[in-house]
Length: 214
Length: 238
Image 1 (cartoon, each protein chain N blue to C red):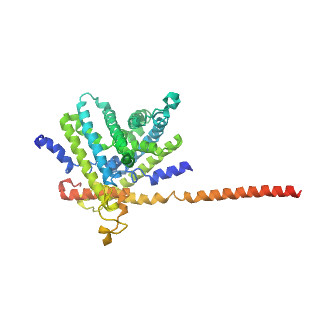
Image 2 (cartoon, one colour):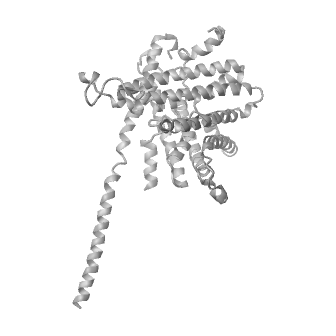
Image 3 (tube, rainbow over the protein chains, first blue to last red):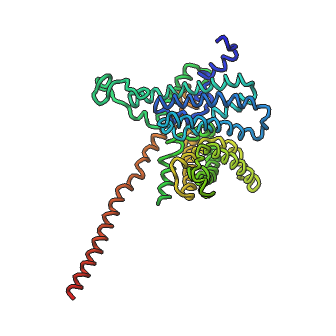
């Protein structure tokens, strides 16, 4: 990364693992859990959040000196809401089916705590370029968890990835199904998302002891 | 009946936390003690009960396609539904501020217990989610919208109360170190969600009753027809 100094690069790489917005900072859980039954939906959601966070962080950072601190929450909400409306309209125009599966969760990006959290903690006190990197980094950290959860839920629940069967045909008993493997439909139910995230947290904290809570 | 059905459906079947994962951030952050959990839960019920009907009115008379027809015939074609996110969040943010000011003025004791949670609530996804679900499920009347707001608030309240009670107790058990705190809370919530799935069958009993009503109606019809025929017969006899 020739373009970025070491300090700037850290802004992007930190949220991917040791300061992950979902598993460590506990931000933005709602949408992470509700739409991860398919990999495709998780990917689109991640891209939407990436866009909103990148642009939003820059906008807030540019305005940081003129926002009165008393009404900053409302200003932030309006900026995010405007960006989310753009995302929602684009999705409705080019991927109507997908925008139906995501339903209200596109709208809920507005109250996604990652976005408000990063605005408060970072963009209000830093210059636009660093805020932009922070936004991208945190959105990527969010995306990583969404994609891991989506991958396992779709693979184990439906035997497909992006809607393409990868484990063979469950009805004609080809591939792994010939060995007696069955899809675990329970993985597609909402509560399993929580348990999968819980397991990710378990794995991450047992690899990095510094993160363990007392 | 419609009200009762929506009430139980929003509390148990479509529970905000276990079925659609709304308001998870504050649910995880504020569930360490039962007392604070009760405060936040009450505030959520309160704010949902105000904002959902308010946003229902906004949606019906300003935002829906054709909603502006009350302004005159030339406004019938307008569709402002793309503005709903920004309108809803603005309503919620201002209402929360307003409620805070009113409560502080008139009931300092309520303010002391609820007050600190109110600013937190403006960015709680359960509140915006309540309004967005109200819009996407096309709830028909203002009364039902109010009912929906209150009952989904109660559902959220129950969920945070339950997890707070469990988290208070779990401090005495020997959880594997990497799972302590956040991890075990996620897994417990997942298990509670599986438990709540069992409420799914609660309201399906209604389907069987509908055909019966039809048959009874038919029976009544045939009876009246019989009577008419009888009457005819008696006429003929006379």
